[in-house]
Length: 364
Image (cartoon, rainbow, N blue to C red):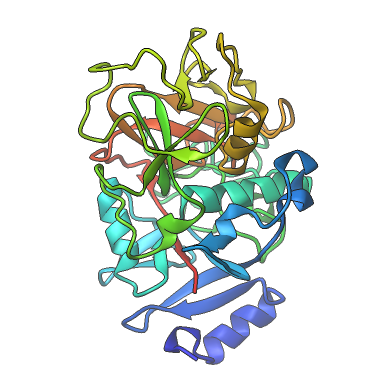
């Protein structure tokens, strides 16, 4: 058994305290990271409209995985590795490539939480009837203002005069994904999380197949051949029209079949939602609409709402100029827009902000 799974007193105590929901994995240098064990589930376990078979988050390199390990906490750079630890200020103000590479520095199998993994968690929460709250109002929940976490700056929850990040996992159990002490903390709010495997280029939706973004060998770069568009008729993954080197608006083919996002209009195969509005309000108004088969694929990847109500009003943000990579979950100042279905596709690869970080994950 690899040393990552070493049995020691810390791991034993964490597993005992959480009923086995949380374990401790060890990085290449031997640093501990608190990780939730997420067992494999099928699409039909979530909703019959998603089809059948294992959710694509559990397919890595063409192989089904029995479980994923997701950081219990948003991540921190400690000694050049990316760790999930309680009660710390998560690392922020770094760009996409920084977090992708930092997570991989932990060793084989380690990665920044992928977009498809975040989607799997959101769908699980929705199916199981619990949508976690979190730090969405400067250290407190905008939906339940008596719920607070410990602000990094020591400020009063709700005070908007300074930043509002909270220490990881310092909120109540209602800020955990399953409403228990053993749940994943802060999927709603606190900081946005870079989530590899999803981007838009000139509005065209592009993904990395299944959960291959979790593979250390997968090229996540702007011109990587791993990026695939989605055929608006069949739902199959196809070669993109655009690459990350093409600025949005330089060229739009007259008969594109790939699915796109836009903030308005009725173009063929285009899904529409005004930026800053709820994800669940997205529409499919194209003169040639996205087919039912393609919508099913989009729902699996968390790119089209699985239902038009009941998703918490979580927000959708979009910029159709150039390459924009996914960040998920919301932040401390987004109020009701924050949540497990919140999807932000307006940040460039080079973007860095005090409200953007990520979370480590692992798959064997």
